[in-house]
Amino acid sequence: MDTKDRSGKLTGPVILAQAKILEKRLPAEALQVPQKQEEEAAKGETEQREDAAAAMEEPEETEAPSLRIVLDPGHGGPGLTDEQELGAIYRDTYEKYLTLEIARAMEEELSQYGNVEVFLTRDTDKAMTLKERAAYAESVGADLLVSLHLNASLEHNFYGSEVFVSAFDWFYARGAGVGQSILNQLTDYGFVSKGVKTRLGSKGADYYGIIRECKSLGIPALIVEHGYMDEDSDWSRMCTEEALRDLGQRDARGLAAYFGLEKGTVLGELPKPEESIPAYAVAPDTTPPEEVWYKKELQRDGRYLITLHGAERESRVMYYDYSLDGGVTYSRLNLWGTKETIQFYLPLTGEEELVFRVYNNYELRTGTDG
Image 1 (cartoon, helix red, strand yellow):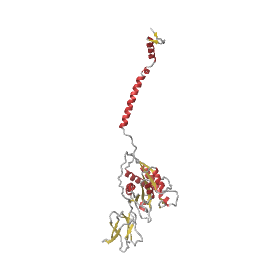
Image 2 (cartoon, rainbow, N blue to C red):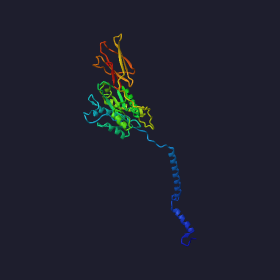
Image 3 (cartoon, rainbow, N blue to C red):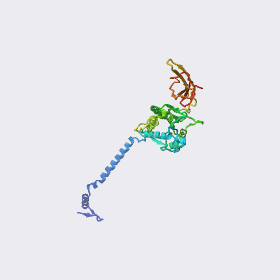
Image 4 (tube, rainbow, N blue to C red):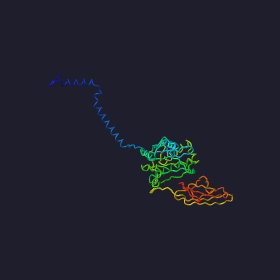
């Protein structure tokens, strides 16, 4: 029997009947909502704990080290009279064009290595001051600037590759290390190495502006003089597009070898080059070879054996040449070797007026004619 309370609401069996009716009308899923919410909440808490544990176990990813190298094609500019813009001019060719081709090839080769970013001070034939080149290197956060050049000499007789670097502390150590590695590549190509050198101005600072400007901004720099445009043997290694491309690739491989870069591989850590920082400025050799003499001996076969001596204590003896007419004309420069005294044969009559000249790798010479 249904009853009502004082408020008029149904109680007892009526309430039970209504509950059963509601149970029939609602789907089973609706009745399970509280239970599912509890299960999902518990699952979410478990996943959060697992994610937190994984984060603690896995090390944070660190960015791979990357060198920033600025390549500086020497000279450049639209003019046809400014030697600073044109560079050396021989065989109807301007140095500024050749250095740009070398730089492009070097950039392309380096782009195949990991851990390096490459920038060019110029990619067109435009004029830039040395200060502007150094400022550009600073603006991209350069670790090193490599200035690319070709050489020429007043008497058109020198040949070989050389690198100029700062004379001071870490700037010398870094430049000399990279420079020697590049020279190793160039000598493999057939160039003669004149070595890594310094040059100071009258006030004792670095002579070359690009090295000096970069040093003032904390950037080590080097000048690579690949070879001489006015000498036949050197010119043969730079006179075609293929040869210039080869030079740029060799420059790149030398730089990559020094820093331990690998083609197609990004290293998590770069090896640290072994660099010896000098305690004092590395001064250039400013004097010619100290002692030069020769003697000739007639052999049984009618030839003359020449003994030529050259002493050089500050740098090294690099070349020698000789005259048969008392110094009016001279032979081509010959490579010296590694010893202070060398011997060779000359086809002489015995009536010649012999003069010998001995050069160090700074192109300073001493002759036997006093």
